Length: 149
Image (tube, rainbow, N blue to C red; front, side):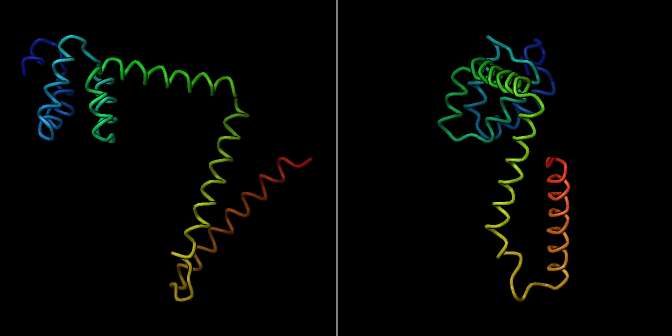
């Protein structure tokens, strides 16, 4: 509460980051608050920190809590580097990235098709599955037609 009153912490950060963190792990919340008193983070930075914290294992969390400001700085540099690469690669780079993702998704679908399409499958579900495969084939045919001379 002192941090909110002193302006070190926004009410949003207090209610959406610090309170849930304190309920889950009071020591981590205290550690983070001690850092924020010396080097405050913006609400957006703190939200990003907490989002990453929630997805991380204990060792990563400990490193994050050692220096939250450094964590944010590294994350920002990584984002800027990715954005610079996207600009450098241009629309062609984005297109190739997208087509590689389509390829990967199709690979995952192939690996799991036996879980959704089997001899005793619901006929309606079989029909729906085939309809979607046909839609994908049609889109692929349109794409192929666009890139062929």
